Amino acid sequence: NKLMTYKVNHGDCNVPQKWKPLGSWVNRQRKQYKKKQNGEKVSLSDQRVEKLEAIGFSWGKKKDVWNDRFKELKQFWTEVCSLKQDFQTLFVSFQVL
Image (tube, rainbow, N blue to C red; front, side):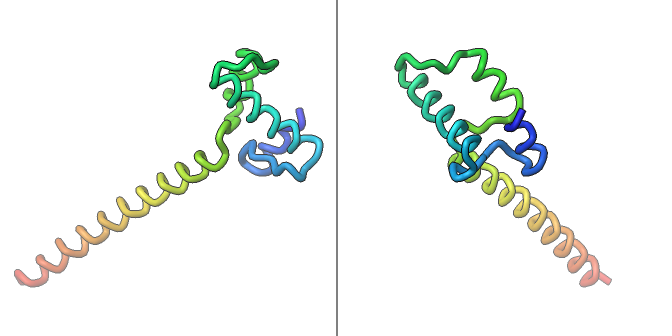
């Protein structure tokens, strides 16, 4: 499967549209899915949706990228705040000595 090969090599299913024909196919799947969500009749079956989701297919590329970066930012700040707290505790300990 070309999409799985792409995912193995790139870590996601976000194939650029310029990578024809796979990129065009991925774009069509996203468009079909959007129409399906709006109640329009499309050829995209529930089974295909499930198969694509099972391999980590992203239906809204931009939204998923934003959410991924936000999670990374939250993790970064959690680590920074933890380090800051450790430093403050250490600093107070030295002041007591």
